[in-house]
Image (cartoon, rainbow, N blue to C red; front, top):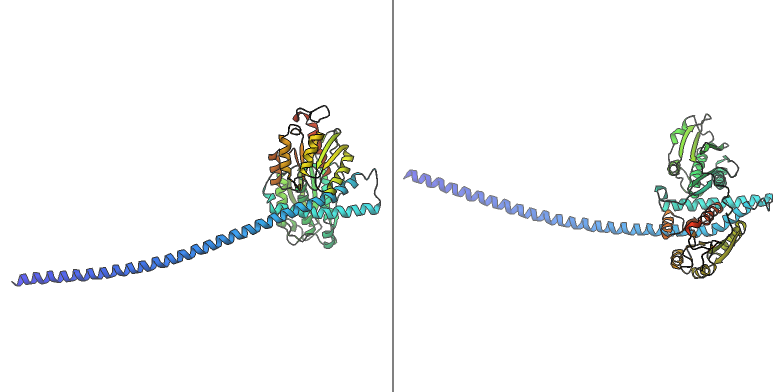
Length: 440
């Protein structure tokens, strides 16, 4: 009997212990469920807060991106607007220089033209730098290339930097502008390389010093050496190789440094190197392949007489082109709207058409498309002469079938070369008569 009671007591005690443990476990499970629910609620609130913050951030990024895009479009539009009057300014100065032998300028007139060229060069450099920055041009993109006279381009750069040189108390010993040392490249890109190198030399030259420039041809290369004036102990120049320039340039903008000039030079198939000058300064040496000989026909003269149609709404640019045509031996007809240009193209059957893109009634792409579908005009070469000068614009122009894409302001040498290309390529225009115009 005692044994039975003992067993029952142990069973009852085990049951009570099991019930107690179950109650404790249930209480712990309930507590964990409540804690889990509380944590899930908090996590849900935090997730919602993060989603709201992310949504706000995305909206702000979109707003800032749209604002930057708008500002970029405004800057590009402003650059295009500036290129049109600059075409008139620099175009007429080029004509004055080309006509100097026939109608020599007086000393005061020559000085005045030099000042106009210098001011125009500064403005063009500003436009080109802005375009390069807004379109990330240094990072790539196809660009129209022409023969560029390096001495003339260097002279233009030096004229544009005279004000900065005077402020720094440094003289620029630039070789005189003369023809003969030519490279193949984008004219704006060449000027940017030269400008950055000369600015770099100015920035690291002591007041009272002289920045010397030596330009020569060695075998198949054009070589330019720019010596800055002594600016510190020997070897100091090497420490700044390819560093971004500090301070501000003549236009108040931050200099971009010789590193970008090196990339631009390499894109042209050239090299840029630096060595120490015995005087303690630095010498930057630019080596670029020389342009092939152009042949017997100068780039500023046409290989044969031609009839041209110029479609442009700016009266000053038309006046400039009339004088250019007179010098080139062209018979020039002008139209100020796309519709008028289409009518004249059908009536005249010109040897080529110079076409502005920003016309008042229809853009140049539409004019080109209508010319291409008309049997009377589809074989007439069309050259764009436009303020839309970015690589994206020129790529779009090539895709649209333009025979050349000439950026404003007008470069007479580039214009002459492009015109000779289309006039000499008679095989590309079937159905032309003996004078190079399409048969009706």
